[in-house]
Image (cartoon, rainbow, N blue to C red):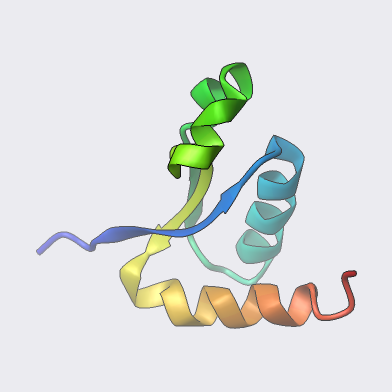
Length: 76
């Protein structure tokens, strides 16, 4: 049985996606960035929910949210 891959979060900028990707990887959560090339070339795709997306396995979704929430708790 294949594990389902789901979208965790959309981003406007690649740097933001790469930061969260690094945080998840350091916490042993498998992930990948999707649609990065098209979103950087055509930023209007973000408005269509087709921008840069951070993907995780469905089984890791809740844990990934908690890790990112804790990491970004002091962001303004």
